[in-house]
Image (cartoon, rainbow, N blue to C red; front, side, top):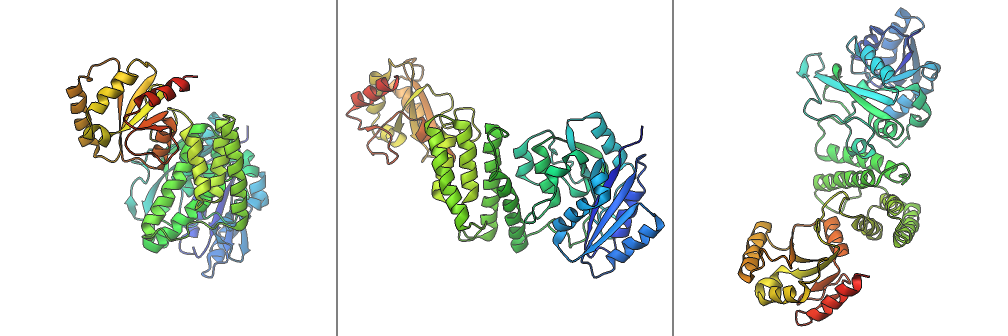
Length: 469
């Protein structure tokens, strides 16, 4: 049987010193099938196109050269994918114009794809070299635990799929291309998008030669350049989050996908050094869409359609990330997801009904613990949660444990005592609020939870009994 054909997509800009090695390394593969190299010279002024043209004369019929005005790396990759050789190929491979391949790269990767039809994209490690070709770092991903499988949130979290190592099935061409113009990186887009339709596999060897020469787009960026790259990452993540569908993305994946976006946003704010910086562009249309989605999410939540509500709330928060209402709706949904949800679980292991008392109230009035035990101790489905989130965790544990011992409750089966310590982030605080049935203390809560003063423990008991249904 004829070996599958491969089209190698090379976006080249001002790469005259390196593009020759890149193209020749693709043509020199020991792969048995047809390998055709498609190069788009993206408006170079240094003779990049002339270097490629010379190679094309040496390898007639195996190199396509397209010259265009500068459209950026992603625009050049899209133009590569439009060429006849790319449209006919069984597989598409990405090769940056300043990188190079070892001779056995395609053979190893196509063999994996041939043996595993569920895999749609395979990528690998890279050996970092300098401008002169000397090895700077033997392995880029050796300590990174490169991801594989079909996890949307994993590949959305960060860009670990190195561009020049990527090979994708031609059958995914229509969902992978064209890459949206506002994406900054072809490789990150291809990884996340491919994970929505197929599995992704990783091969540690052979390693692509990745050239670090000081003008790479993102490697090693710091300061303002790092902030720019983080903003670009947020733009990519946001594109996907605005389109998530409950039917396609499990609950855990939805949660982790949003958390990935939040982590990049937090890093961007840290790099910026101020919270008063625009991280994403939000239009009036985006705000209107977010408001409509928030209403839909809350309606779904009220009818206990949690998975669909989570997807809609995620789209709302992605449409308008600065909106307190949009992010608040997402928190409301996530707070109702139960003990197996992603993130902090301040009431993990608690019984179905939870009475909460502030730690400082107990420490100020130790008799309050005895009163709670006498009033609630016969309710086997109730946990007494001690809210110590404002305390140092170890100090709170020591002081509340000592108090329980003094009161004789350390081994008292009547009282299921849980200590809630902090610090809690927004999600943890939301889940704590959502999990409480009643509060007891000297301060009225502002979250609307039923509340009773320490001298009205009978009222707290009545609420718990009513909550049993």
